[in-house]
Image (cartoon, rainbow, N blue to C red; front, side, top):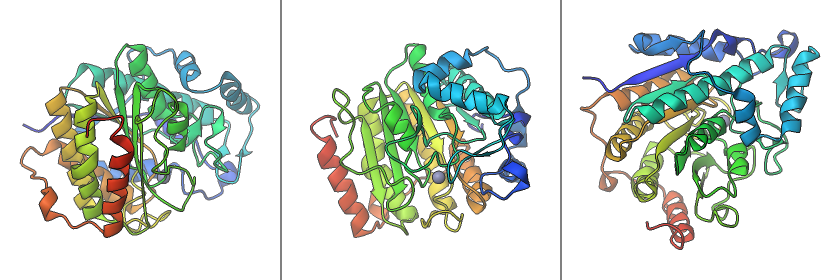
Length: 356
Ligand SMILES: [Zn+2]
């Protein structure tokens, strides 16, 4: 039997669209790319278009756990005023943005609820706008912009799980950009572990190995910055050597994934060289860990703009749902020297705080 996957989306996610019909890489056609790819890869029956969301979620209360009220009110006011334009050099708002962004938070919370109830199942949300660059009060950790994000969906999922009393919560971010918003929001929170693999030298410019969490939360923020050009074997090595042992040491009660696909080779916004090989491995790894720990997985779409969405996202689902898939061994993969050095440095930074 195939392992269980449920994919949630809402028609409201199409409503967040670039002002005046202009071009922007983060646009509603991304959702079409994803839905088409899912159908073509045999996942149509796993997709649920949510109209009446259950259970009911107090979205504003949830947002108050992760964002300053003044920021939330600022965004809501823009929508009420019918604002159509750019908040910064990257990030647009249109009059329906809030409807989409609030629904994104709501569906993430609902998917989280289901993941908390169902060990070793995957609940995957396809929200727009994305969220991981949105910090407590807007752009995070000194980043120049909000990076296409409005409200931080994955942070809302983690906050929802905390409200329900679960800890620790694990967030894994494999989007090619650093999840600076997520990291800022949970910087001093020891109950939310954040592991982030990202390309170094591009937006948002944060995510150094040395950043391991604020006072009282040291060792709960794990940054794995990588040089441009890192590929499947580099990422697989990082997971087998570092991420997986770390997760088993942490024993999270929920696995939350910031699932970006812009590290896929040729996706367009960065210079990593991942293919289906890594994403299928990643899906299987999520399944194996969730099964071993008896916890559920919630995943939220972040970036990914073309081929990454088409090939990377279905590959994660295939890896998760295919019991016969065999993962490569640590001995069989050949990472670059740089990647080995980064892993060694991260381990040295974490050793005083985590048993790895
Ligand atoms: Zn990204």
